[in-house]
Image (cartoon, rainbow, N blue to C red; front, side):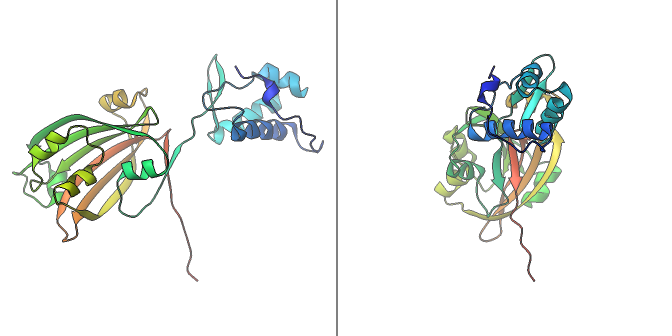
Length: 250
């Protein structure tokens, strides 16, 4: 447990409500790294003693920090600093692995399964192929910064030689692999929603059910407009968030 000695001893305006001061001190300790992800905060009793207050302002401060997703509380154990979320952006056409690595994260891809299967209705519509066609279905897991983050379900058009993809095993980047065989994906559409993890997905991502996750689906095309990849993927909502840069034209 991290003791209350990590908290600021700065002089503050006495008119500032105590719950605001407690919250500000804890926020400062978290942002400065004195309290790191996974660290346990001082107990309510310690905070009450340090600030000379009742439990009410301490609990107000902790509730505010929890609402801001800076901490989480475990019944009977105390309060802990949350892991900082990985921030993604609504971006130009790019692979997730490239985005994560460029942001300084480590990415360990694992191919869980590969199989040639009949196209379902969604896949056939996205790839513009008949449902009688077969596609290469690939399930992959990304472990990012030593923690599972995302499970992919790729479906690749029959134009992709399945033997080449099978031989690649735990390939680093799907787009990079396709480029190496002369298939360049340059555009696509992506939708973002929410879902509850299935038992299998929760097991791979090492989270307890019920658990909410981001649900994304993407159709990717060549420069000539030929759809080659249809992928759905689920991402841990407690570890990843999407940012959008907004502007206004006058």
